[in-house]
Image (tube, rainbow, N blue to C red; front, side):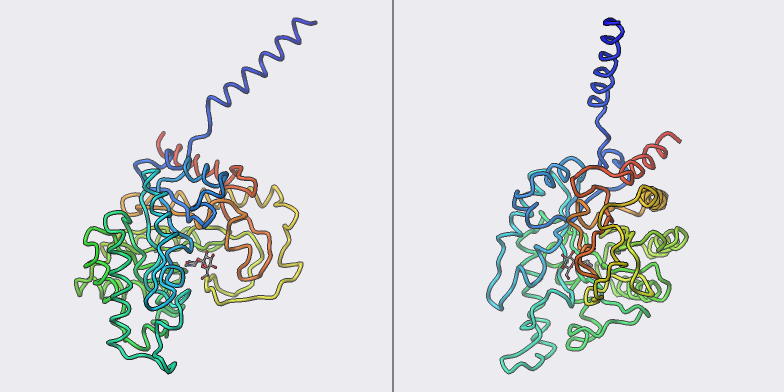
Length: 375
Ligand code: 9MR
């Protein structure tokens, strides 16, 4: 009896030791040789205040993006004031862990202070003044991190859903060539850096066509655009596997690389007709919009895992052109989706749960890579 109990306990110990010895493969190892795997990191992670998050970042990812730390309002809040405190820490974090470091983002209509576009009287400045301000901003920041930040999101979200150019102050004041100018200035400041046009919902045909025309035109003019960022703010049903596949192929044909730059998959009820990541959108909280406040049902957890597997299979199919897949956040608790477009929801869009544990979607992503390697 005693003997049998001893044997049962030994078997349990051996099993748990075996499990410990076989720690799950990290994402960056699973996809080594295919593409880099990254996460956008936030202030507590950059400054070392989120040690649990930092442990996940160091173990799982070989590239980082700054969720907010390098945006204009943070790094250049006043005309003559640059604040590099957090940005320097961000770059040091990436260097310490030998990571591929992304800069996000140079020219956007959001999180940019109003002074950028205005004179002392509050009127819009003229084209030459705004071009000069843009040049100063880009050359200062890209120049400071020359050779250290390997890839820049140069222009972010310049397109409307119908594929026309967004009527941002950049477009209104400078005109259409603000995009080409931004890329030229970034290239001048660091000729080795990869330069990306980054946008969401490019899998939708009208917007995709607008982006394809834009990139084709820039390439024809010799503008140094090296990649397109498909942000990848997805849902369980959008984009279809076919649209994801076709979108990557379409950009590849233009001779640019593709990065999945801000991946997350929403499982919560949609509040818009069309998939979007338009930050200005705000919708009132209602209980029915927040169905999983007390936890995600197993069935949805499995749907999310299946969805991630489907998406990763498409990215892998295009491993010759997809150079990086970056999640927009580390754990579910970190995600912007908890507060957008409805404030205070409980969202589950990433691969690690609120306590930092890998979810079934994590295992699904690892399995896709492992299956491809045994074929
Ligand atoms: O995740 C970012 C969030 O913390 C900010 O409040 C928000 C404000 O503009 O920006 C979020 O990041 C956005 C990214 O910079 C560009 N694409 C859409 C992302 C999600 O809104």
